[in-house]
Image (cartoon, rainbow, N blue to C red):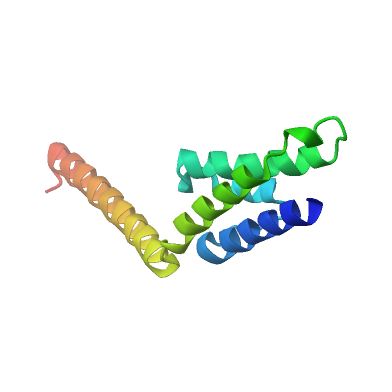
Length: 122
């Protein structure tokens, strides 16, 4: 069972790194770094896998691990991550940043122009 849980966690970890570019020493750290880029249900599935890893370390909690549920969570996470296109995501992020800068430049130049007109310089 330990091998299966570690394999599931490793598969999800590799997919997070490949498709979202999120690196980390553990799956929990990767989940924290991914933050709001993941939908709530996908985050919950990854949290389930992290919880199973923690449960395996405690002999009293090991009976709470539901392996078929973990495998279903892994399938959902991998299916979601596979449909993401990292190139498109990077491109849209850069476009949003450029648009934000452009809007800020326009606002500052508009305020500057209004002040110059108000002062009678122009």
